[in-house]
Image 1 (tube, rainbow, N blue to C red):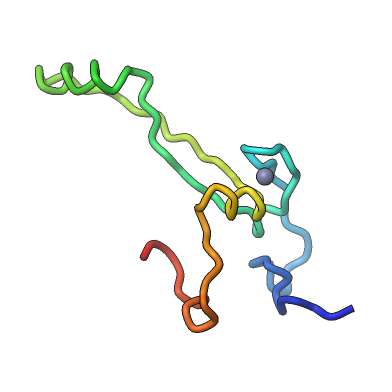
Image 2: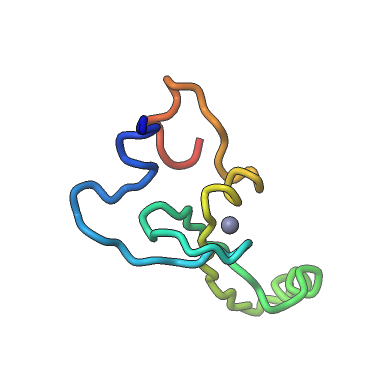
Length: 94
Ligand SMILES: [Zn+2]
């Protein structure tokens, strides 16, 4: 069968198995090197209240939540886009 991508859409290279992670959205089990990883800061305080408290000079700790998305969910939620061939090699934020 024809191979769509040389890497199979993964970042594994010649190393053997990579661990599996679960997609945060649909629960699918995806290889860790294939999944899209997102870290976001989540505050336990309501944003409006947090703004008020910050104005008074208090420190509000925010947790870091790491989420993994399978390729389907990453595309569906707009976190990754289909890009032109010339653009595909660029990484990170644009
Ligand atoms: Zn998913």
